[in-house]
Length: 128
Image (cartoon, rainbow, N blue to C red; front, side, top):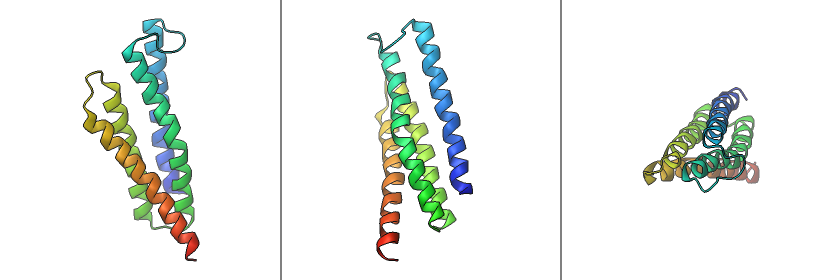
């Protein structure tokens, strides 16, 4: 549980950072709701939304892996992959002249964390 708490803290800081960044952009561009047809606003919204869509399930899965008795190395690998993946994705999608390597790497690491957790949990439950 201590390892998941560490990654939850890091990801919470990133979520708040993305939230504030989106709010500041809304204020600067005077866009109250939606993206106002502004690509920069759309990208900020999607980075924030994508983070909110993937991170909760990933953290729940990470918590379940940790509390099921998995190796600390595995839990750190999964948490680290998630953390680096979310940072990479946010950086890549935020850029109007996007370098897709960051986006693809971010999603690959995020999916690796979620799918590896799911596989570990399924196997550990089926073969107990």
